[in-house]
Structure formats: C-alpha cells, structure tokens
Length: 431
Image (cartoon, rainbow, N blue to C red; front, side, top):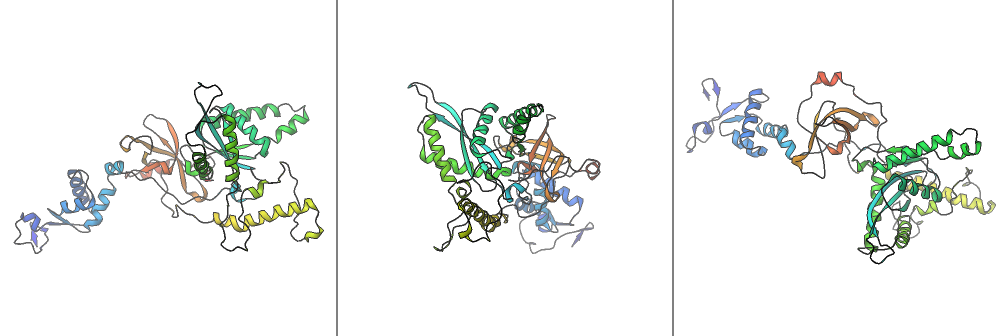
C-alpha cells in the first residue's frame, strides 16, 4: 500500500490495538544511506543493544529489507560495541623457522625463558626467604630441556647462567628469547665482549677461541608468548612438577638444584613422538636419546646405515645408533609439526592507518588504550602478524596481532597508498 508516495507493509494486523505506524510500517530499501542512519540512531537510542533488540525496535515504525543483515552489520560496525567486547585479530599460523625442522646437535638452537619466582631458605634460622628464578633452556630441534637456578633478574645473572649452560651443553649458534630487559642487556654485553676479543687480532689463539662464541640472538615481539610456544610449554611442564614436589616448602639452594636436575631428567624422558599400542614397536623417541653420549664437539660422520653391524667397531656402532635416532626424528617426529592446530584460515591483513584497541591483560577492557597502525611487518607469504602502533602519548610500540583488536573505523585508501606498506626489519617467526 502507498501513503504519500511511500510504500507501507500491508500485513494482517489491521485489528491489532497498536499504532498505525506499527501496523503498516514504511518499507526501507536495502543498502541505502538513509536506512543505515536510521539503524545507527535507533541502535544508540536502545543503549547499544544487540541485533535482535535493534531489529524489533526498528520494526515499530519501519520494515527494512534484509533487516537481520542490517541489524548485525550495524552492531558489528559500532565502535562503542567493539570497544566493550573487543576481538583480537587472527592470522594463518606461520611457517616454522629452519631451526625447528633441520637436524642439528642438541642445544645448537636454543630458546630461553624465565620461570618463577621461587623462594629459597637461608642458612640462618631467622633469615628471610631469598627470591630466585629458574632459567629454562629448550632445544628447538629435539625439545631437550636444561634448567639453571638464577638468583636475580640482572643481565649479569643471565650471562652467568648462559656460561654454565655452555660449559655443559656446548656453545649454541642461535638463541631465541623474549624482549625482557635482562635478555636484551645480555645480548648487548655479549656483543661488546666478542668485539673486544675480535679487536685483538695479534693474538691468534684468542681470536680463534672467540670466533666460536658467536651467538646470534633472535627476539620475539613484545607481549607475544604465542611466538615462543615451545619454551612456554616447557615452563608449564616444569611448574607442573615443581608444584607437586616442592609445594609450599622452603628449600635451600642446594636442595632446589637437586630438584631441578631431577625435573630436567623427567622432562628429557618425555616422548616427542606418539606412543604405539603395539608391544613389538620400538620405544618412543625422547630428547634423552639425543643427549646421552654426545660430546660437545663432534666431527661429521659418514652414513653407516648400509654397513653390516659386524663390520663396525664400537665407536661406529655408537654413531650408527645416533643416526638411527635422527632417522626416526625425521620419520616420526617431523611429520607431527605439519598440522596447524589453530589459526587455519587466511584473514585480511591489518592496514597502515587503522585505528585499533591494544589489549592489556592487566587492565579492564574499558581502560585499554587506542592506537593507530604506523607500520606492519609481514612475514612468510606477506601475512601480517606484527604491527607498530602509535599510542596517544606519541610513543611507538610493537605488538603482535593477538594483542590488537580492530575497530570498525574505515581507513582512507588514499592515505594508506601514500604510506610505506612494509618494513625493512626481518619478519618474526613462531618457534
């Protein structure tokens, strides 16, 4: 039916005791600016209610075509609703770095994290408990664990723990860690120490020794524990055993060191391949298979798999056993890293200039800070998982997309085109 040139819905509510506008609401066209303005106004009048409330309120006077889609779109594009119930951004799970999928000596590629604090009992009876921490070293290839007791969070303490680790496990070539201040300072001091050694070129022996201590540090983005899931999982397993063994007891440093050694042995005995129900199958592969009997410095060995065992000496039999472990690592363990258990779809990349909400787990949602994306850091395949943001104070910070909530604010396409679309920094990878 028509009234003043406007189309009204002619339904079956003619005898209902309601207003005429509600009996015969005006039809609103789909995808029209006026329809969107009416929906936005009613959404604010209903105190930012849900899509069902919005649709039922609109139908008191109007009948929008495609009303359910209009209501959902209005609520989805509301900035106030997005701030009240923010959703972090997800992207396809990234490729594993070469250090995770390439055969190497145990602890040649290492991830480091801190766990704690734990409290130690002093020797004196009335002494206050001492706060200490545990440095967790994880081999990125075979998941072997190494635990070191650290008395504080200074860079000197982490360097001392790194030296103890090197003395027993050998010098790693690559170290992955988070952006904690103690790790950053440790990298700077190690770099200065190496430069000092390399400057003494007249001492050939010192130069040769120092050149073997070249350790390459990789830092994951700040506040991005998902980029270091391997050592985060090891910390979780370590705490699982520590709570059940120690509980609330106060132990001395010597007793805690003993407990850490025992937990380390348990962690290195965990299978890294699925267990078989067939009793005739070989035992599951564990990190301990790669740790027992391995010298710190080992020369390359030829492939001995085709030579009969009777023709091998004792040392060659040990090398054959090691090669057997690595063959099982490739056949059984490496294939388990193929599947993406989370983040299985490719989503739209975060654009430069976007207005976002920065997630802060220590603050309520209403106090989360807003920011503008000033730069993106695309990784493998051009997918953005890290972005640089400018916060209201003018400071630039770097955050992973798991800590960023996109707000429904349109970005000017001209402004985006004029900005640089990527950074020269190397892409961050998940380990």
